[in-house]
Length: 350
Image (cartoon, rainbow, N blue to C red; front, side, top):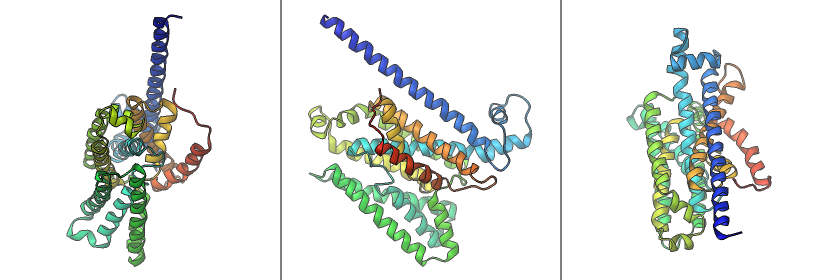
């Protein structure tokens, strides 16, 4: 076989793999949209998917009450589930790429625990004179960014490895969880209940303004992450090889940390602490499309959005008429799924 024939065969095989990856991304997008429809349809007053589609598109006969339920009550929550899931999935994917560790995520690096502590502190001190709807998200955002600043300082130090940053994040996780437990211990039963419910994660307080803010931040941050996709791909080959290709590893590490911190802090400040999405979604992407950043990041975004949307459906279906905190559902589903990922035979995306 000539060199030209071998090259043509390699190019054809590469194009076939890319077509397969695009099919995976498209199929997951379709499933995600179907989950969105079911999420809007599920609730105390059950609606059929057809009623939801008619209400969203404005086509066909529909009741005014149905339009009000769909557009003003359930749609912001359902879309917030997609946006927050996408933010956590993207953040987890790039933290795992940046630190070359499959257990890295905004949750395991202490950012989510810091957000929880900030929210609890705001609740404990009556919002510091501000309205609770403003003070709680603001406190969560501030402390999440404080945790990110600590990681940023670690990443900016010379001779600091990825393992050191992970250990620093784990230290933050235990620190803020301990402080949070202290606040709950000193709080009244009523206040402790409020803190606990927020920490479980809930989409019930999603509104169109908070959705627009979260979606805007997530969209801009994902575009910035995609702009550095080739650098992140080079980083997967090792820090020394990435540096030899002209990548400023320290600068890239700090930039990605800041982007992920802003995206995660914004998402968690409105819905509370939601674990496992940022940890599991990147593994799903890696198993289906591999680690080519052109497909890996979009797939992580879609997988995260699909996971949280499906968890939202389950949270409203466990007990008809009751609404379980979505964070509990992601933990219940996420733990066995994570164990399966750990013990299942390794499989890379084609």
